[in-house]
Image (spheres, helix red, strand yellow):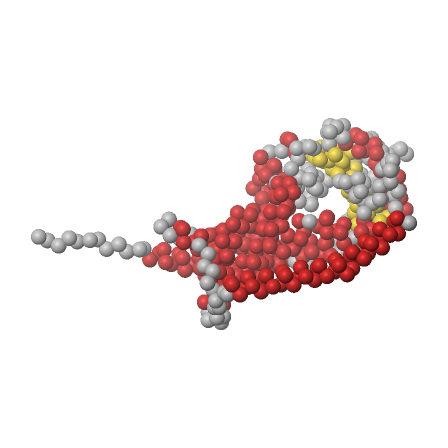
Length: 430
């Protein structure tokens, strides 16, 4: 009887070659750009709550609302702004507050003090109830705007914006290569979900894979939207959405009315602009420049996904008061609507408060992935020795620290807080 012949199963070599390429790609991207990925992630997380941090760090921006107080007419507020800044000749953009205790922020795009800088407008905060100037600062001179500028331009002006666009593309490549390395095949899928607790390096690498898998989708969205926000020309060309990138003012619309002695004021321009959109909210009002300038009124309709930078815009002739142009998101093409989603997707405001918090956490992951990946890479190179984790010892030390903290807290309550409460109670009885 002849001996059975079994076919020899040989794994194709190109699989090993492909994996080697993914490994080299992932490692070298991490070594060369990983620190910048972490920097962009951390600054992006802080920028998610930029307005909240601005109010926390600058208490002078908080408006005290007296009972029965009413917001001053916009023309009076603008007159008080011009009186406070008489030498600013050009367009002012007045950003309306979104809360009753918020200030009006007026921006002058190209002040002489920072004219040659890439982006450093003057920002003047006004009390909407009194017209008092609460603060005056330039973009990049406060901590939150400095962090925002570092996130968007790396403090390198136009060159930095290009670098950020490239980093967005490289981050997408790094994420895709990491997912390719993570996939073990169907037979070993359960192994990648196990956590090895015995040693520090093995635990760090397992957490690296877990964290990378959990955050991959969010990081891909952030990298994709960040790339197109930093380099909008590509997507605008593909979607036929010229002039609709974040920060674009739209078309240059000119007044055609005959100049006269009774130009339209701000309140009238806002009233005319809200005519086609009676249920909209006024977000920004930009004043005209020169005889051919128009009022640009930026509104937000209820169903617009953009919270801070909505796209509903009306241009009003400064002489005749007629509407010269309208940009209505309800009439956008599919490509234009896709372009308008970039900013709210990148900031998380498209998903409300929950989305912003998730994006805040996602922005922290590149730094954690970089540290854990660098730890494992150093171990593989022989530059770092692995160490066993003494979990019982850590638990004991942690328990001792908690007990010591609780003891100090009890001592502070007994020696400081309780006597203060007794003194206050005694004075109140008198």
